[in-house]
Amino acid sequence: MCPQIQELTMVSSVGKNFANVYVSESFEEVDRTVVTVYLEADGVEYKHFTFVLGKGKTRVTLTELGAGKYNCYAIQFAGDEKAEAKISFEIGDSDSVVGMLGEIRDRLDRL
Image 1 (cartoon, rainbow, N blue to C red):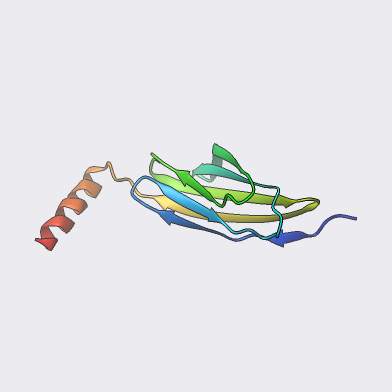
Image 2 (image 1 turned 90 degrees about the horizontal axis):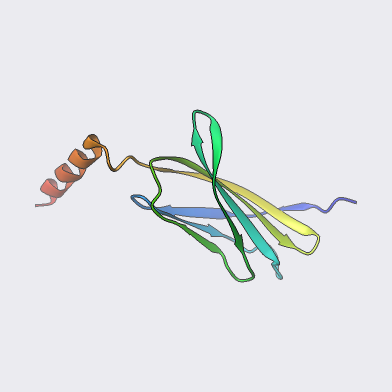
């Protein structure tokens, strides 16, 4: 008999070139959570990072990210049970001239 897959929830908090990905604990006794992060370009996913979180760990911090779309997949294990989730987020191109001009404009508007 195949174990039933439960739903896992994830959220992200995205900054200029970083993101925090938070994973819920779907089980009372979590063995581990595996979070895999892919950079998507032209419809193709490129593996970027894989993290294995132990019991009680629910956050992954990604730093120095380049511009683009990132897809995060998580699988949480508790004995024979598992839960899965996927989220996506985007990091803007902060190094571009347009981005820099937008930042300067925003700062001038605040003066």
